[in-house]
Structure formats: structure tokens, C-alpha cells
Image (cartoon, rainbow, N blue to C red; front, side):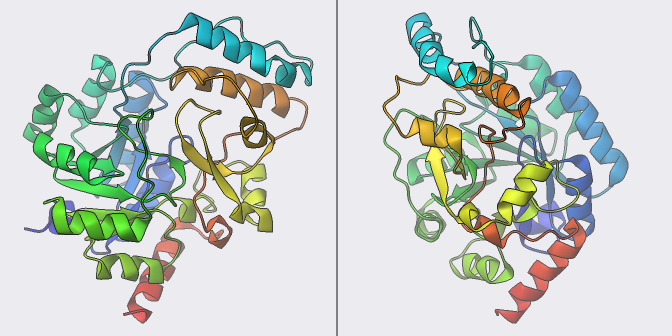
Length: 350
């Protein structure tokens, strides 16, 4: 049985799980249309995760993907965090706000949070995917025992090989073009920055598990191209941001329609991990000489506070607007309609 048959989907399309953007309504609409919908619980606690999964399950009896973060435990460094807050002080001051006195880690890794992991395990969704690394061996065994298909993000052959050795059923080949956070296991190691086509081709040939291509794919022709490289499916995220079911705010949606949305940039100043998003005042500040960034997600605590301070003054230039290359091609269509359009384009490109 192929992995697509195990998933029970008829279109080789997966909606990327985008924390803060994906919603149960979006995931349900995608699943109902014949693809695989997804939600992301990486920015939730166990209670929030259970509520999100329950809402999605009430909307669909079909398969869906629950995505969790499996990042390493953040390393606290009081001196580095203090220097970071001093560097950000002028940014807060411009809005008459004070930088946080101290920083916390707003999100937990599923590796460290037993309650969050239990929320996923108890739900036993058709698919569980992980980003930033791998769950523990015991967690992987439990998920597989529960019957979930396990998918890990890989940005390199080494990461894909680790995922296979750990027992993952498939990998997402996340190319350099992809929006949102890079799935690198070690954000301090050299990033190979392979484009989607190159990485997909490499992993198809050598990873030994089914490969799902992701990064910069915005239409059916892109999906067809990924399949031609040997991928079993394509994962699209930015393409779904414009859907009315997404949680993107009005400003983010408006930015996607502007020509400068094509100028995405990879930065780690917002969250502490490299991530691709729309250029804005925050990313521009990060391109200057700044001190070492605190670990993810500690740095995100300051980034979110700054975005809130700016937003209170009507300035959205410090928000995290994660998007991949080709963001201007996002279409403001209902999710089910978008899936149908993508399928027609894919067939026409055959």
C-alpha cells in the first residue's frame, strides 16, 4: 500500500501546517476537497491542542495532519538575552513601550512536553508531522502503535536519513524557497540551502522513504513538476494563506497582493530560528549589525512583544508574515475551490 493510499487522499496535495495561520476550518475544507488538510499545534499548549483537534474532528471524518514542533530544549543565556533586549530597546521606545525585563520560552517542544504529546497521541490522527527535529524514540513508537503515519521535515539528506532510521514513514523535502521556519534540526549548523527541486531529487534517490516536495510551489504546474521528480505529493503553504478560512489578518492578506511580496527574506531575528517571510521593518533591522540572537523560541518572546507594541500604533511592519518565494501568486479563493483549481492545473500540465 502506498503512503497516499494509507492517507486515503485522492489528490497528491498536502496543505502545509502553518502555526498561527492554519485553522480547523481550513484543514477540513482541504480534506473534504480530496487533499490532506493540516493544523499546527506548535504554538499551543496541551489544552489548546486538544481543543483544536476536537474542532477539526467535528468538521470532518476524513484524514488530517497534526503538526508538532520537536526543537531542542532552548539554552538559556542571561548575558546574551540581556544584550538582545538592549539592542531592541530603541525599537520598543519608538512606540512608547518598554522591552520585556526578561524573556521566556513561549512554546514547548513536543520532546519536552508530555502533556502536549499526550494530546496528539490520544487523538491518534491519520498523520502526525514534526518540524525542527524528531520526537523521542518512545514517542515515535507510541505514535506508530496508535496507527498514525509519521512524517518529518528534512532540509538535507542527513536529516532525511535520521528520520528514516527513527521510523518515520515519509519526509517533507523542504527547499530553500519554503516560507516559514526552516526545519533544520540544528539551526546553528551550516545550512545546505538546497532548492526544492535539487533536494527532492536527492531524497527521492537516496532517502529510502517517500518524499513530499515543499517550497515555492504555488500552482498545479509546480505540483506536477514535483511529481515528475519522484515526489509522492507536494506540500503547499503560502498558496493557502489567501484563503478566507486561514487566520491571516487583513494586513497580511493585503501585503500578499503587493508587488513587494515577491521580496521574501530568511531571518532569525524575529524568532531565534531562520525563517522566510515578507520583508518588513523588523527584517530590515535584522540585516544590520545586531548581537547574537537568543535561542528559539526565547527570541520570539521579544519579537511578539515588539509586534504587539507596533500594532497598537497601527504599524504592522514588525509582524511575522511568513511566506515563501512566489508569495504574490497566492490566490484569495475558498480552500476547496483552490484545491480544485490546483488539481485542474496539475492535470493540464501532464
